[in-house]
Image (cartoon, rainbow, N blue to C red; front, side, top):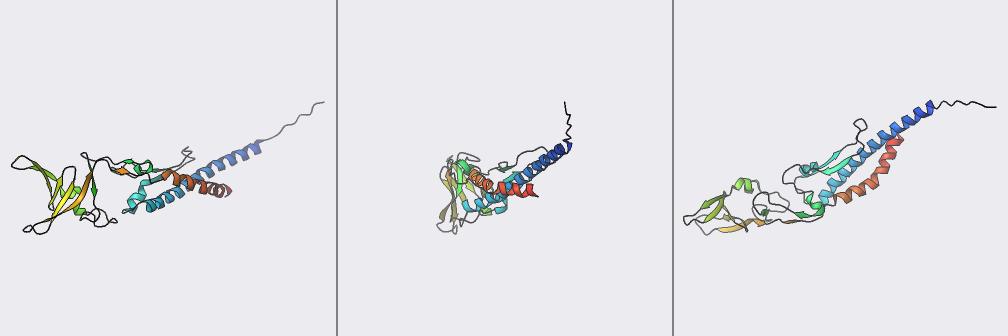
Length: 213
């Protein structure tokens, strides 16, 4: 004797599809919530590790890319924007050296000098390299001299100096920039470490919150 049984699993299949779809959206939303949490943590880390003079500029260097179910993007990213010229932030993750933008040396502003009176201040606008406009001249004897605006001058491989005081008196010479070949960058950022810690603390909470709604 045979008994035929026909099971209609369409409702179960439909429910499974709804759960899978809901799971995908919840995962994407939780990933996006988590990368935003990481972004905030990374920006706070910048304040702890560095003397940040231009907060808005440096905060914008920590960017995110979001996951999206509709666009079939199954991951989210937190990263440092290296597209801007002369930005060294990522170099502080593993350490390294600052390469000269031009020539063979890097000009390091001296704290306490007219170029940077205090460490918290940016380089004085009127004493940036662009403003002092150092140019090479030749003396009558054929020697090369580098002179710029505001009574500045350069001694190759040593630094940029400025004469102060009345021109009719013996002037005082102050060092504005020291020239260094490839100054070292210390590995102090810990960008990956901060991201991993924040992910461990936030991911599960974010997912349960999104999937539970």
